[in-house]
Picture 1: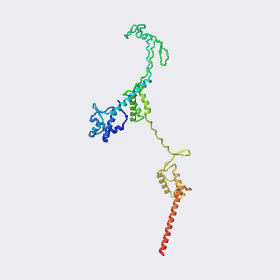
Picture 2 (picture 1 turned 180 degrees about the horizontal axis):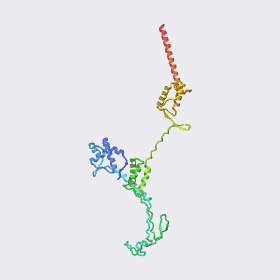
Picture 3 (picture 1 turned 180 degrees about the vertical axis):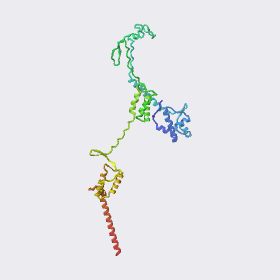
Picture 4 (picture 1 turned 90 degrees about the vertical axis):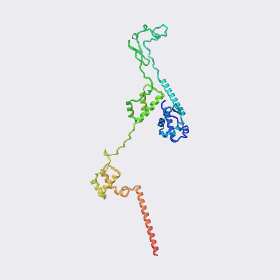
Length: 371
């Protein structure tokens, strides 16, 4: 029997069995049960085999051997477990039912092959070539009474579809078209290197092996019949292969169109220096050119600002400098700026009131001391 991949796990019965076992003994007992289902029968009672299956050392196995083996029965040198045998028998019966059902379904859908009538056989002629004689038990015909095949006149030949047409005199009859037979999946069916390379171009190796093994095991147990198993595999692979990964869309660069030409924003070059127009704007606003240029370099480098025209950006930077010093926009007062300024004014007024109150208290104290 082939390996059992899934089986019903009776938790209540398992816990009742391992009630007196330690954690290590429970793990050894569970591994023996899994090996039992995988093989379809119990393993031998050899110490080497039991140590290999349970994954314990020989010393550790000797501590739990008596308790674990008491849950099995030894028959003909092999372990026997009644519950495992019962479940394996159920699985085997279900597999046989599926196999017979698959064979019966294939027999219904498979069309019978017509037997072509021999051209030298006449409907009213007996097999031995004599029309009015009683057939004897000897099946050997009298060769003296048989007509040679070449001398028989062929007037018509059968063609597929029920139609017939005249055949030339002396021409051999056409053979019926051949049809591939439906056969079960061969047990040694495998993929050739070209097919494996084609599949590996669509999916990793572990994915291909899992899909192929499950597909092969299913059809071997079900007894499916088909005429072309290679085509059947490719139909299955077309559904099972993973979808091709989709590359994420790349972000488009930010482009600014001016006068019909697209220009890209760039960082401030390291060798940038202000021009004559920047010097005139700086003198008009009353700032030092070198100090403002260094300030502009620091701001652009710290924030990663990008501009199409850095000289024009520097001119705007100079014009807005006074507005930056006030904490608001040039010619406007934003809501955030008004709130901050109102807070500053309230704090200044409170400090003035506190100082005035302290001064009045000091004057009163001085007057009392003078009296």
